[in-house]
Length: 300
Image (tube, helix red, strand yellow):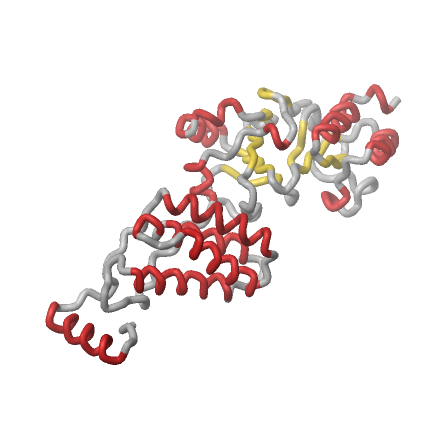
């Protein structure tokens, strides 16, 4: 009977905790072709749907699709997991399951407003899963060779997961861009005019970002703009400029504001090193300054 199937009981438990599930072909990692012909798009938490699936195929394995705010680190290489947990000891307490080949699935919570690409491998030996876009095979699923998945630290509800350590998250995000070399003002250094010029250059990049790259591009430039705050840039002004630019690119205001605030906070703790991108001899700098003041414009 379906109620006695270990996979069915596990699927019900996962769904009750807030994770969508889908049936996998018996002994395999792929979605069951007859029960879910459209794959993870049909992942569900509905009790009646789950019962119908496992009543039809009690031997089906369990695929687990974590919601948008949950990141699953999929360690193919056990040594990659060992190295990362030494670097970030807090990961040791996060829910994780062991895969048949000795790998690890580690479950973490992303900060609100932060999104990552599941298609890009940033860390050697680690794939990014979950986030509502990539499922993982979950215990007690067994493969045809008899090996299976099992939890080493039990799974908890998404809101109870530990957050991704900041240092690790910065590795997973694209690095902030360097200050544009084309932005220069006669005052140089960290003058208010230069800080404004840099902020407007960052906002212009955000505003022209194409669909599919907007969220992470906003975060990159928000981190960069945050690095200007210790030099005197107003955080409120930076937030409004970046949010307005992101909305021009097509992001909803709430998403843009959450991402901008997070990026600015991160960047504020990592001040940018500002050097004059075009160092000039003193006499030439003096002449340019004098000319710019006369015209009321900044030299670029």
